[in-house]
Image (cartoon, rainbow, N blue to C red; front, side):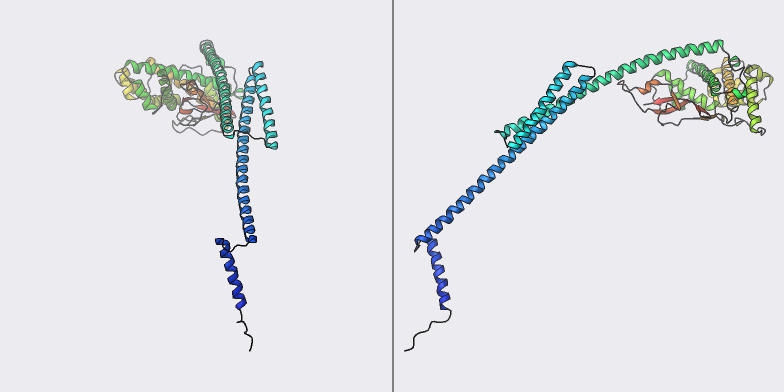
Length: 447
């Protein structure tokens, strides 16, 4: 009888069945051999060992990170303390404070030692045993050092402010003294040194900007006298000076009530200097002359006219160029309503318009001012090149080169702080340029 042959592939199936059966026994604990139990125990012990090792490492890393964080917090706190000590050292040097310097030096050295200790702690991994408390304490120390630094800087700024205030007060006193001296010199010059005697020995070749400046100062003085007289008449006849000043220069805030006069001076100067840049003052056609001849002609008129009294000259020469100049400027300067309130009628105006010369003190003051402006115009065209006039526009920044302030109060605020760049409210008296020389314009400043 033939032997029975196994079906192909059966041994593979049997192997798979045995493996599955063995796995089930391991899972259920049935039919487990001693080798299988030992193998299973080793695997479980290894798994547990791996898990415990991972947890220990995580705890160690967290502890290390916390220690480094506390160390950094202490480092920043120490740096802040060094900055505070340095600031204290600086302020103790001026004015000199020996005890303060020594205290600041000891604090700085102590903090540097502290920084060295922190370095060694990091290298040896010796961290704070109570990191939460150490972190909070370091933050508190840092904030205290920052506050101390700010307090020191505040004291320094306060000291500097007191020094500046004392300098400002000294300069104010010096300015008041100089103004007083200038007033005394002006009085001496006006009483003892007539313009004719001051410029008698001046020749055309020797004419300088200093001579021109003397004439300009006479112009300003005559304008101020006329404005004072006009404002006095306006006040006595019931005019509202504040409203009139606002009509001349709108939207201007005056530091003091007496500063209203500057707006009237501004108006008078605008009228009187209108056309100053033209040789004929825009009074009509004048014969054309060669530049040198015209220069000499203006200088001769200047030399001759400075000796004359304007009233006597106009009586003898009512149709002269100066006569037309006075008539035109007066009619533009004095409004009919203003004149009516002053004199009750327009007789004086009509007399001036017809070439006459009223003998009122008001018109005499106007004539004196007109004469000084006329002399300044002749002096301006005696130069080669001629002197040029300039005005400062409203809103421009103040410049010491081209401007002189008539209200120095604008440089100081209500809190007595210095204002570095006040703006121009309006020009009171125009400025002039003679070659490279500048005669400053007088301006009223706004804050």
